[in-house]
Picture 1: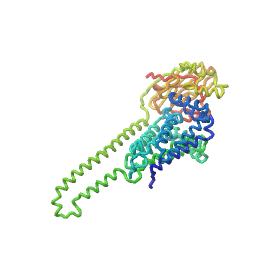
Picture 2: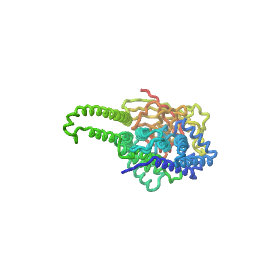
Picture 3: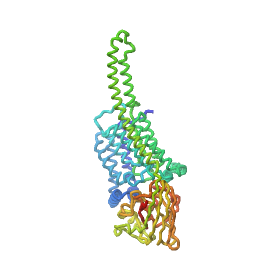
Picture 4: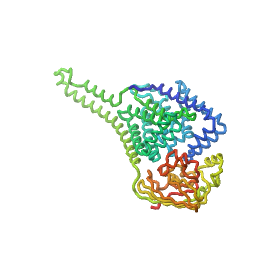
Length: 551
Ligand SMILES: [Cu+2]
């Protein structure tokens, strides 16, 4: 099999993808406010404030004259695409594409949702535009002539830089698979189920049936894919470079079909083909164009050199004795030189491999789970407005009932934090964690009689106040609390969790509404799936309490 790509082939392919993106921007959906509401705002709502706020502000600003901005967005991308097609406009086009990619990575993709702790390689992390920029660096025109054995991609960062970037991307994938959010029992199953909602019929039924098969096996799948990803990252530094690149490309195609629904290109809502095709293009860019590896070249020339100076063969026996001493001395010297050159080269390679192995060890030990030390914590639950020092700037409503959708919208995009409603309830709780085993209870008084309330442990890196620390990332979905006729609710907890919950940075949040009927099967999940967090994002909070470690 001889797969390869010339540098101009690579550049033109990249240009065509930019043109496709430009064309997608002219779809009617992008000219509707649904684009901002359905794509930008939900992704902004899940981000840390410093990323999410500028996203919301930019969306609101663009919303004032959406037709103008959208047309401009589309034209910029078309211009970049066209620029890449012609040799003499490549540099300005690439420069524009780098700037554009950064802006889109932030405002459109929320840095691939990585800071939100919700990135998964399956659904396209770290985001397509990052790969646009990376491939852009590889096709940057340089003086260097195309070497045999070199790859199409070299450009500004060189071939070694390209391989480093590849390794970084796949090591990143390993780390992402190790995150508890992707390692949860139903993480993969849920991601497939969510993806099936945007797919063509045949693909949707494949995804649904796979979602059924993978249900409950999230951890095994994540660990297997973490290991494969690491092999792909390390492989490009070994003799199996070609195989590592092809394996990476194949895995990316599988992700693209199953997790990214082929970029949902036919949905009318896609802004780019997602990460799958870009990973394939990157792999092709880094494929050596002749089936010769550095190591093989070194060895065969060394063998050739030995043969040339060999005293055996056609040399007459008479001369042999005469020159034997001379030749031996010569050979020794040359061998020493060669071996030291080889040693340096293999030294570098071993250093690179060693570094990768160290990362592996770290990643695998990170994947391995938590310690079995016992820790206990108490929680004091107080109404949200007590926590919210900036409560007055926020929209507060006594009840969810009768709230118009525009009021909901305002509430959601209010400055920072999780939306909440007023409550006169209060409560307390106690948690105990040994290894992966979480037990405890919580008790609340002052609730509306017979009301039901979703409640979760949120975190990590969160807190009930200030509002900007109220992370919407759910570490554990606890069973709903049900109030009795006096408005008192009590519930115990006995769950298996996949991270250290009983520690700083976690908080218990009680919501105004129960877990939706369609999401009941998510109760007990630790951590919650992304789909579930999205489903819950419109349930305002009533009470919050920080996890306070007592022993
Ligand atoms: Cu919650």
